[in-house]
Image (cartoon, rainbow, N blue to C red; front, side, top):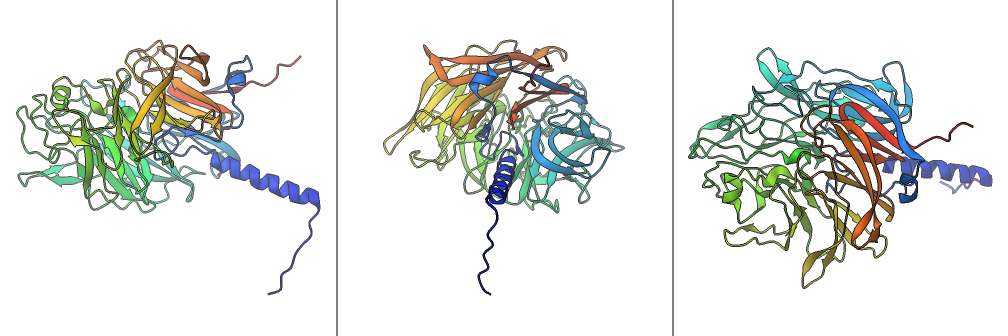
Length: 535
């Protein structure tokens, strides 16, 4: 075929390039999973609007407050240029997706605050007697869903009160209509215990709190306990389904397969305060487990893997590696859950040797691990690359690359302060060097909080955080912003603190397209650059 060139007018070429660039940037700014990516860095490096200067100014503020029907415990997700195909607002919208404990999923216009769709997926299940989830006695959608842009599908786990009792189903919903693309799959699983008996998954006792993970062509969901009740009936589990068809994977990981314990107490839950399981470059899955029998005697790293960072294969057949703190027996005895926080896998950089991961829990120690060799367990010492005191952590770390030197930073969020550490790694050693801390996060009922990072490439980084509220549902929460590049006497500049909703949950702020989304009790608040005042 001959080569046929077409000479287009210059303005057409420029316009076409701008359209393609705009589309590329829009797709790049979609936030489709918990903490931005499967490493769980929390870093959106394509935020071109918000800067430390305009966030700290009077031009930044609340744009919209959108009412929803119940508590939101998962993180909002954001997708630009979605074609809404159902309801009264069909057409193209930038959409925030929010899921509530009443089993309602909202598609909300990110600029106008208009509710585009809000289907309900059935009566929320009853929590076990005496247990409240962020003040609720019913539980519907507790975890963060995940979106597959390649198929325009939102995956979500929904807990309903069926005639026979609570039941979980995983749904694959069309992004434009929020209707099921395939029949939802009833979640069921079993595992053989060490004595040959069978443990069966029971939705009445298993809580699906961690964010969903889309990786390896599969959807993964992790389960733990309700308020650490029914300890003889609950075991931490990681389950998976094929994306698209929702066919269950043949294997699962049950983290306590012992048939007996001194106090008939199992758990080894995966909960991580809502943080999602992460992946490494090979698609292996990492997460952190909580406490088991309070005698502190049941750990063996095989049939009971409590208080540990665990790495498993993508097909869920094999535990590949673990790290367990040397004080594991005390953590069990004191309910000192290592699993109160998640594990972040640092993105690979040429100067980072070896591959790295970080995790922290209630005890307030952040461990830096060689992700290729997590360290196993020793009762004498922690076989890790470094241990850093950050304060009690119902939390998870974040990450960005600093514009001043091009070196990676780890952002911790234990205790009452954000701390920023420079990652220094070479063939001889790996260490974190603290370079700054924030003013205290106030108005909290427990230690730790969640951060995200926005920047334009590496320029203009901003660290965002939302405080834990007090234990009462109506008490306020606050959105903070800090500038890690403006540091005086080791303290970074606080750009913003503003009320941002209410409720007691593990809230992650989401930053995209010049806006910040904070979902809490019965509301989504949208912050950004305020329109000019009319004269």
